[in-house]
Length: 180
Image (cartoon, rainbow, N blue to C red; front, side, top):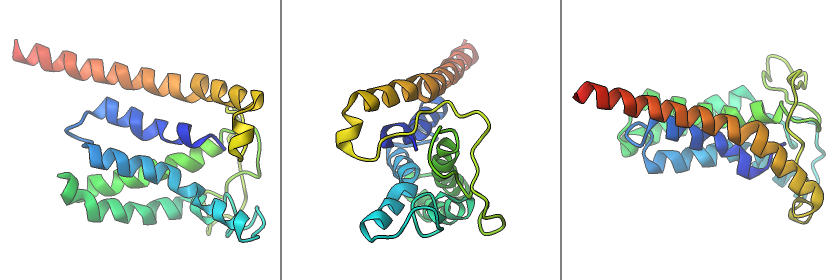
């Protein structure tokens, strides 16, 4: 799994690309929380639930179904964000879905049953450039943790933010030309 810091890269980059009018601050914060939410299944470790099943880590909360269900929160909150309901739904569902997709790009763990309950096979993408993150904070603050953060900066943050900044520049360039 990528670190929590990297799971928020998708909503942050999307907000930069789309702009504050489309993704206001409260929606961005909710999107960041949605991108992290699937790892709440880490509570299973504390409850003695083994990893690998749908109740453990990388289980139900890492599925498309979970993302679609959590999207309902965006549907409900969209009016508060001054967004259309379908946009709020899509925003939260896609931010949530980004989590298991990034996890499928890591080089460790048990894979993701993204299509559960239709398909319970745990899979990864064939391209897996992200170093799997240590779970404990102590191990994250080690040389191995530094290697993981460097991997995430190069394989996730740099490409996403580059694309976001290009989109931002294009948006602002088009706006200036229209006013002329």
